[in-house]
Image: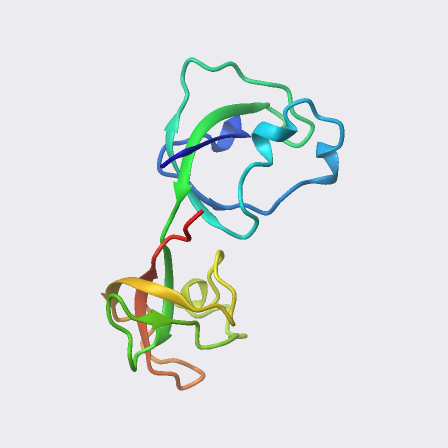
Length: 149
């Protein structure tokens, strides 16, 4: 079920995904705090609808103000060790990777999942984008199921 929250007007696009980072020091004293700060820190969300009839509200964080949107937790694409990587299984990330130039780095160190966290694999996507893992890991690209609120 979608949650209504406020997001920067420039970011208010249906389908956009983001990881909620929590409160900014600039939120102190804002009259809209309860509408903005209603998500779970570290969770990946997808905007499912932009409230077109809602007004743009002033915001100390977003220079063009904020708009009301509907969001829901989103799946997280990630690489996991290939052994045991199948839809419905529980998986976790292989561990940190210092190779930021690798085309798979964004999946090996994805936003929205911690290294020690175990998550249910929703979908197996297949081979990761890299030709060879510099850490000699045998990895599979998957989508972790969205976090339940």
